[in-house]
Length: 557
Ligand SMILES: [Zn+2]
Image 1 (cartoon, rainbow, N blue to C red):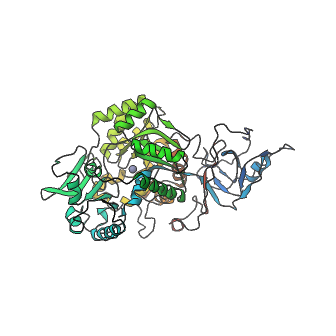
Image 2 (cartoon, protein in one colour):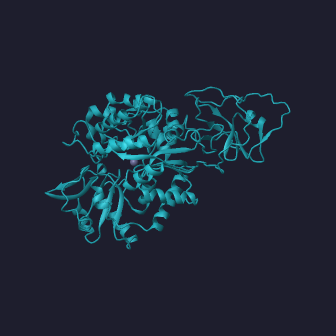
Image 3 (cartoon, rainbow, N blue to C red):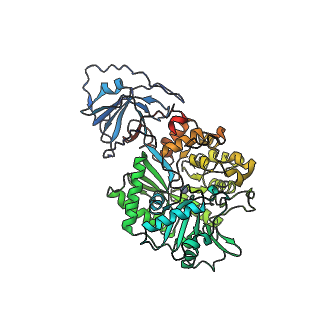
């Protein structure tokens, strides 16, 4: 995170009706698209009209409003938690006054950031796990695990998250024997960085009684010398994970509060939580209600029996700070563990990847969710999975629909299939940091032809003139500035390696900022309340001492 960033989020009690409805539409903006400068103050003739009282006013700022024209303003007035005026200092201050007028002395103000695809619960759990992110070898992982065990000797299971075999010298999956030699007497389960595979020891496999399991639909039990190697992929991961002795409710609550602090520190106001079970929905709902979590959550429900039963009967949850209006479905796995479903075999192994849901179950779910008015957000990474989901969506959605169904990741999409996003107004929800994290090995999986339509964010943006941008944390870092950096510069954040990845598929700064604010809000049906700094919307913003419209990659890194 950049040093010296000044940030604050001002939110007051939100009321349904906005007071002070005085028409200030004559506050003019200089029309600007894809360029930036502070517009000139507009002279207004208001005579001796008495000024309206605002709760507070922020002036002398560079305000990237992200309104329809991407206008830039310098002053905003707030009443009852809502924006009542935006414009030049002169224009706003001629109409509003306040006992609390703050000057930002030229600092930069953006609509509060939204992370359009993340795992809030996953982040919380990862904080309780051994941190294996960035480990360059199996030995480094063992060292970290030993330290973790010393500090957590009371635990019945050792859990970790973040390993990635692509960072090892041989790039091969590790096996259970390595863990057995150091941890023979305690079950160990380590989640891969993408959450789509686990690496376990023999003790964990015995505890889960998996040796007699031969096959799992939508999953793979990786074999070595005729026996399970200790690596379980996609649907097979639950064979192990359902046996991990759970953390206590108190521990989970503490971890969720830590995850909340991390989001707030990273200037994230809204998170689209990409997949929750029913008990997780209930817990988040009650914690937000009690004021224990301040990040506003738009959650996607997993299609578990409990969720389907509840939501089909009761409809969605729609509270100011907690909404569940979507279902999350997994079509395939991830590229790193070769679970992403491809049209042609992987370039580095003779396999097509995994289909995580049977075709008839998918069609049934899509049909009932459409009838009940739910949004559907389907994880699809491989080109075959993306085509499959686009075709299934197309059989249900009509041209010109406003259902805002999404494809999460849309990572490898054949150019031939892309126009389906535009025709059926399907929103690609993408994570720019994935492009940078995967750039050094994705070509090994896909080969030199398919790589051209992988992480093709500019081509996807052209379909609907918008994308929803997220991080997929804890798969990637929580920082929205890293999302901005990856989308615009498409190279490593630390600039140790400045090689760019398919630079023609980068997004421009406005496209990116909109994807992190108003377009992300749109992808959750929230564009009328947040996502831009406009009259009538929530008074929520991020204030930085850096100008994202002009900053160089050296200064942002
Ligand atoms: Zn995800």
